[in-house]
Structure formats: structure tokens, C-alpha cells
Length: 161
Image 1: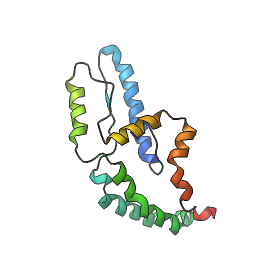
Image 2: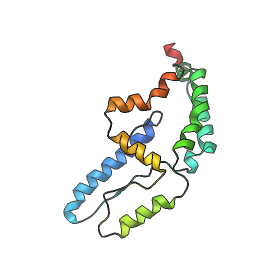
Image 3: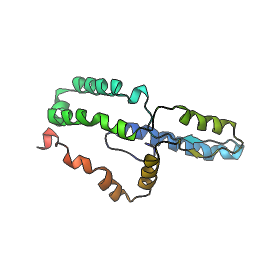
Image 4: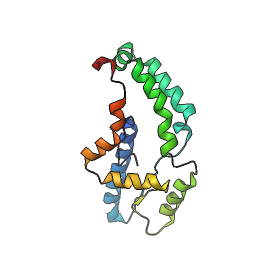
């Protein structure tokens, strides 16, 4: 779903997903004339090694350590510490789980079906499905207000203080 909604602190990840959806949409439209059907599989959030605390924490620490002094000074230690303290909350609340079959089954269906769906959004927790469905239809100003409210409580960048 990161290809439909861009969450704070996930810009680069969302960009890659937006690009994949745009490619899939374009390919589907171009290949229709030859009878080739293209489906997009859009899982929500699954606990994979890349999304686990064992990877994310050390990776963020590595990136912080390897950032130029000017970048670390711009953000400031307080901002970094706050980010590290809340990084694990997102995955635990929003993760759909670890059952990879919820993603693989739609892939198999798309390949085997004579009439595959254009878009598959593998099931996750019902409240995540509902929240994302509603969020996609909100005016951007309202979406930003509702989902960026935590940002207003974060420490400011050191450079802005």
C-alpha cells in the first residue's frame, strides 16, 4: 500500500512502490492489445527480515554513524534519539503478520486465472485495510493533518532551533 499512500519517514520506500505501480499500470494498458494481462500485487506490511527490529535498528544506527558531520548537526542528537525510540512502534501496530502465503496466494491466482484481477491487495488486519481504504479517499490536506499529527510533537531539527 506504500505505492498508494506515502507515509512519513518512508519516502524512498514509497517512491519505489509508486514507480512499480505506475510501471504495472502502463504495462497493463500497453499489453492489452495483445491479450496479455498484467496484475499488481500490493501487500500491506509484512514482517520480513528487512522490516524487523534486528535489521532496522542497526541499519539506522549505521546510516547515522556514516552520515557527514554536517548532516548529524542539521538533525541533531535529540531528533535522532527520538526517531530511534519510536521506530519499533510502527511495525508492531501496523504489521499484517508473517504469513507470506497471504501474498503468494494472490500471485498464484493472477498467474493461473484466465481473468486475473487488475489489483490484488492481500488481506491483513481488518482495521489496517479499513484505515488505508478510507485514507486513500481523503483530501490530501485532511490526510496530512490526520497522519502527520505526531510530527508536531517531535523535536525540531537542530538547525531550526
